Image (tube, rainbow, N blue to C red; front, side, top):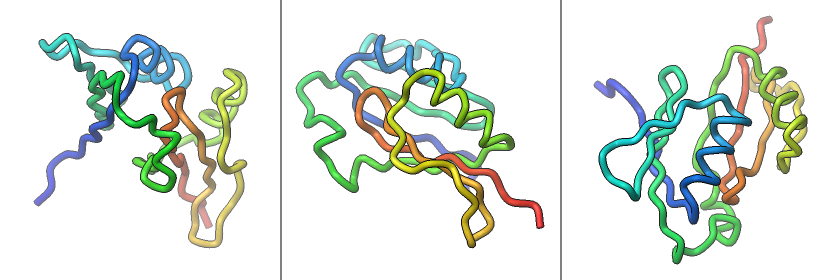
Length: 121
């Protein structure tokens, strides 16, 4: 049984990344007792971010920069918030034949995230 999920990402600057997750996606930023790490928390989603200024930038990882698909209850609100903050979208919002209304974004660090809500049919 899997009881929880947590993503782990490398970021070049924890302050800048934290501001993105807080301001754009509504996450709370938590200290975890190690100055090189932060936990970004929203409801049941946890993202552990480690500061790695010398790591290969996520934008250069191609398909490997795609680390999460977040199923949310109001994807249109997330989309509006991302657009209001000028976030780079990798896929415009649309209804898909697999029963999801979804869009994709690129974080300030170059990581790619898809967000979607289940279509009610």
